[in-house]
Length: 88
Image (tube, rainbow, N blue to C red; front, side, top):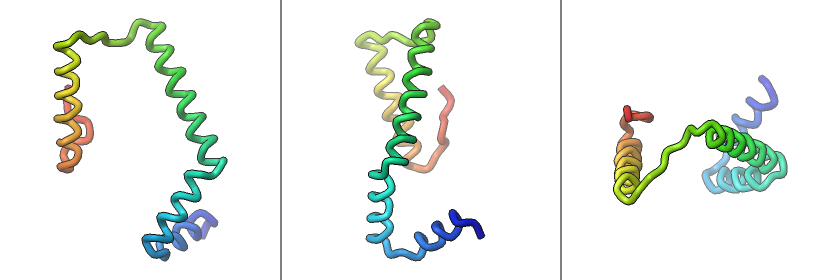
């Protein structure tokens, strides 16, 4: 059994309050923060590249409301356990 598997097994044996405390400790760790920052930088770079290539959508008063309705609809669908990526 790998060290990671041992940690997972030990965490599974904790009570819920201890699991929450372990989770809080992990998300406050420097390693987690560094990974999150690196992911954010990658996402920003991808977004800037898309902007540079003209791959973006502009919205007006009508289309922004349609977008909001679609986001709400897809969110409700996900909460119901439906399709993860409904067709556009």
